[in-house]
Structures are given as structure tokens and as C-alpha cells.
Image (tube, rainbow, N blue to C red; front, side, top):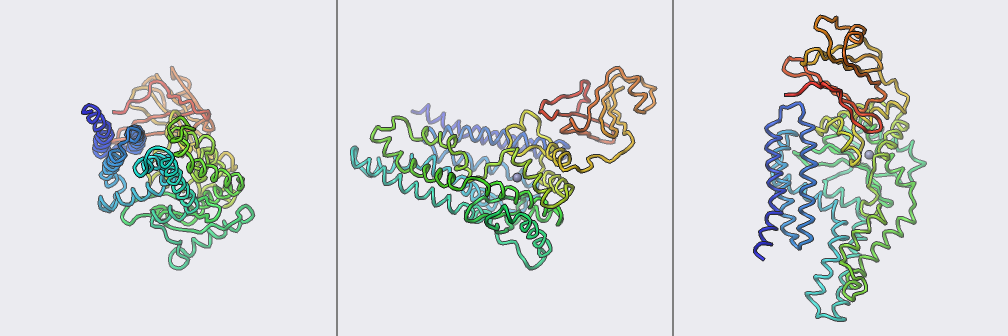
Length: 466
Ligand SMILES: [Zn+2]
């Protein structure tokens, strides 16, 4: 047993050590221009490793150790946040807020996944084996199901409470904004059976840039964080708001009766599962049964908040329709990514696993489909790479990459094209992202692009970063 104990402690330590080590590396690279990419990669790895070990610990019955691991990993983000977001709250303020949000977001999932295990444990503790234990398991299962359904019904209030939300003030400085938001709601009136309530939210002293559509049939709401309200102007906030309105419209168009039926069915499964398992009718462990629920009822776990990438694109386009202008949305999304320190593009191999498309892709779609003039005409811009004979040229409509250009070549598109040994051109419509970096007064350029289908190509002879 000693070996198992040591193994469990090692399972808890690995994510914690990795989180602290990677936090230290990010803090050290605070001035690096690739900081958003580093933060993003770290966030994904820490989340993946922590989730894997926490689930393994829960399955071995070490729920307390799993929770302790999560708290230590969260604490490792604190120094990163202070450097990147200039957070001013205390460590305890940060942990309290983040854990409250975690409980609010995961509470229903915990009641669904861990509730049946808790019901079995309660029945085993209070009742002798046999019929009495089965009855106790049924009673505990019913309590779990009632809590789950109550949580589902109050999802909006729980979310708002954890994030310290309050109604968006009609008086004061937000009055002008509020009338713009109400105008968007008026335009969406026919698709919204219930007008959503509007909230601001966010912790004091902490950075949180986001907006949320709370998709409840009874209590729909839209909440915008203080950080975002401060970072965006009225047009941009209205554009983001219209995007969230589009999510509510889409949810309202869903099948109300099917949703209610699914919720009740899941409640019934949770209520009887522990008793069925004890009486031998369901021969597998309850966790395997509830683990299949998301496959059958995907909307349940997320309370309808699951937002795949195509929904995001549809919401972007509907937002443009509701506001009549694509550019404020493009500006707002760009600002949102900047203040969140998110990379503008997250790589084709990562993007298909994300809930949102990358900023680069969103902007290119918004502009392409809203008919906005995507590119103003400009003269060709020539950038020299630190690798001798390599140049990048941006012209109206296309980007070019030239290799092996002789030293005395005049830096004009026509001559570069003629004398380069290797060249690659790509039209901006085929381009999801393009990055040029300049450092230390020395012109250093990097071009990469991903095709709309998601395959990423890099021109050969790419300038090394160092
Ligand atoms: Zn969205």
C-alpha cells in the first residue's frame, strides 16, 4: 500500500511542479514578443496535465488530493497574472474568485458524475447490506437528482453570483451604452421570446476580459466584464453584445420540449443509478454510465452553453447584421485578444480543438461574408529578412516570399520576382494568418500562413528567431 500512496502523491505533484516551473519560464519571458503564444501553449498544457491527473486521482478515490492539486496549480497562475495582466488583488482574493467560478461552472457536472458515487458511499455508510442499503441508495440518488435539476434551473443566477455581477447601470456613465444595447435587443425582438437581463461582472483588482450569453429559457442574460467594458468603446461593446444576442437567438430557436425531456431523463438516470448498481441490475460502475450521458444529451452538461466554432462564426455574422457594420466587431475582437494576451492565430493543429476559431480566421470570415472592403489599396511593402537574399513583399491582394535574391537587386516587386531563385505567393483570401516581427532595430521577418482548410504551410528558408 505504501507504494500506492507514493504513486498517488507523485500524481498530485506532477501537475503542480509543471505549473510552477512553466509559470516561472513565462514570467522570465515577460518582454518577449511571443508572450501570447507562450501563455497560450502553457495554459493548454497545464490544463491538460492537471485534468488528466485530477481525473486519475478521483478514480482512485483521492478527491481531496485532486482538489488540492487544482488549488496549487491555480496558485501558480497568480504570479503570471500579476506580470501579464497587472492584477492587483491578493492571492486569496484571486483563489476565492477563481474557485467560486469553478464551483459555479462545474457544480452541475459534479452532481452528475460524482453524485452517484457519493450516493453509494452514503448508502454503504448508513445502511447494512441488502434491501435497506438499496433503499438508502435510492433515497440518496433522488436527493442528488433534485439538486442537479435545481442547479440547472438556477444556472444563470449561480453564474452571476459567483462572478459578482450586478445589473448594468442605467444611470451614470453607462446610460449611452445601454440605449445602444437596447436598440440591438429591439432588432432581435422577434427571435427572442424573452428579453435578456443585462449585467456587468468581474472581480475588483483582477483582470477578466469576456462577455457571456447565459442561455436559460426562464432567465436569459448577457453579462459583460468590467475589464472589457473599460477596454472597448461604445460601438465595439455594442458589436460584442450583438454577438452574444446571436447566441441567445440560436438557443431560443432550439427545441424547448426536447431540452426539457432530456433534462428530466438525465435526472431520472441519476436518481435510480446507485440503487440499480447495488441491486446488480446495472453491472458496471455508475461513473461509466454517467460518462456516456454527454454523448446522448450534449446540451445538458453545458446548459446549452456549448459553442462550437461554426456557431461562433454564425454569431459573428448575425452581429454584423444586427449592428449594420463589420468594423466595430473586428476592432472589438482584436482588442479582446490583445487584452487577454491571446495569440491572433493558434495554429491549425490546435484550432480544431478550440471552442472559438482564431481571431485571424474570424476577421477574414467577417470581412469576406459581410462584403466589407477587406483591403485598402497600397503600394508594395518590401521587408528584408536577416537571412541574406530573403525578402517578404506585401502588395495589394497578395503576399510574396523571395529566396536567393542577388545582393545588388533593387528592392522592387518586379525585379525581386524576376531575380529570386525561389518564390512563393499567396492571396490574402487564402491566408488565415500572417505575422511580421521586428526586433532590436534589426529587421527580422517571419511569414507564415494557413490555408482556409487548415493546413499550415511555412515558406522554406524562414528567418530563425534567436
Ligand atoms: Zn460567442
